[in-house]
Image (cartoon, rainbow, N blue to C red; front, side):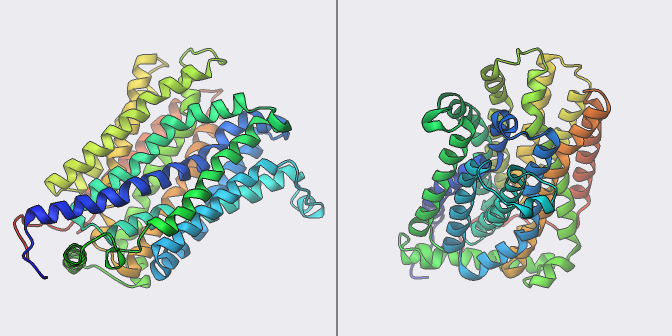
Amino acid sequence: MATTITPQFEEATYKKAAARLIPFLFLCYIVAFLDRVNVGFAKLQMANDLQFSDAIYGFGAGIFFIGYFVFEVPSNVILEKVGARMWIARIMITWGLISSAFMFTGDIHWGSIATMFHCTDAQFTFYFLRFWLGVAEAGFFPGVILYLTYWFPGARRAKMVALFMTAIGTAQLVGSPVSGAIMQFMDGVHGWRGWQWLFLLEGIPSVIIGALVLVILPNGPKTTKWLTEDERDLLVRRIEEDNAAKGDLGGTHSFSGAFKDGRVWALAAVYFALATCFYAVGFWMPTIIQELGIDKKDLLKVGLISMIPWGASIASMVYWGSRSDRTGERRWHCATGMLVTMVGLLVLAVAHKSPVVSIIALTLITSGWAGCVVTFWSLPTAFLSGTAAAAGIAWINAVGNLGGYFGPDLIGTIRTAAGGATEAAFFALSALALVGALIIILLPKAQTPKLATGVRN
C-alpha cells in the first residue's frame, strides 16, 4: 500500500463505506419486506371481494415461500457471477412490478387454464402472482449478505448486518399504519378498492429504488469511485486476509463444496427453526394482541401495541450486533438469542391472555429473534467464500424461509383443532427454538478466532 495504514485511517474508511452503503440497503429491505407481507392487510378487503376462503388465502400466502425456495440458490449464484448492482436492481424492479400487478387479481381471465387447476380466475391469478413474487424476490436477502462480505471482514460484519436488518422491525413499525391508511382513505378513489391501491402504491417504490440501484450501488470496493486508492486497497486487503483465515476452519470456495459441508446443513436447520418461530408469531401477532381484550374495530390500537415488540427488536439488533463485534464472539450470542425467543414462547403459552404478560412475552420473542438473526449470518460467512458463499448462504436462507410456510400454518392448524387455543402451538415452537439453540452450541468450527488488535500494514 502507498502509505502506512493507521487505526484511525482504517476506522474512518469503514465508517465511510458503511455510511454510503448501509442506509441505501436499509431502504431497499424496507420496501422488500412491505411487498412480502402487505397481503396480510389486503386480505381484510380482498378476501371478501374475490370470495377467497381462509384456505385459499393461506395457500396463496404460503406459496410465495415455495417460489422463493426453488430459485434462491440460482439467484444468488447469478449475483456472484454478474455483479451485485445489476442483479439486485433486476430483483427489485421485477418484484415491484409483480407486487403492483396484484391490483388486477380480480380482472385477469384464464379460462380453461384456471379450470384445469380447479380454481376460479381470481384464485389462479392470486396463486400465480404470489409464486412469481417469491421467484422475483429470491436472492435479495442472501445477495445482500453476500455483498457485505465483499466490504466488511468477519470482525466487523455483525454490526453491518444488524444495521441492515433493522429494516424488518422498521417496516413492521411504519408498514401497519401506512397500509391501513391507504386501504381506509383510498378506498373507492377512481373506482378502485383500497386493497388495489395498497398493492399499487407499495409496489411502485420498489421499481423506483431498483432503478436507483443501477446508479448508486457499486459492485465492490475495487470499482468504487468514491473511495481513494488507499481506501480501496485497504478494504480489498482486509477481505483477502479474512478469506485466507477461513482456511483454518476448513473453508470451501466451490459450489459443490457448500453442499458437502455438514455445517451448511446444520445452519439451514437452525435458520428453519428461527424463521418458523418468527413468521408464526409475526403473522399471528395482530390476532394475539386483539384477543387480549381489544375491540375488533379498534385496529389502530392493535397496531400501536404491536409497535412495542417490533421497536424492541430494532434496539436488540443494534445492541446484539455491536456487542458481538466488540467481543469477537458469535456462537453464544446467536444461541442466547434463540434461547430468549424460547423463553418468550413459553411465557406466551402460559400467559392465559394476560395483557401485560403477553406483551412482555412477545417482546422477548422479537428481541431474541433479532439478537439471533443478526449474529447468525456471521457463522456461515466465517467458513464460506466465493461461489460456495453464494450457494451456501442462499441455501441456508431458502431452507430457513420455508418456515414462513410452516410456522403460520402450524398455529392455524392447532387453533382450528383446539377451538381457538394456541398454547400447544407455542409449546411446540419453543421446543423447536431449543433444538435450534442446541445445534448452534454444538456446531463445530464455525467461528474464526478474534483478530488481534493493533496496526496492520
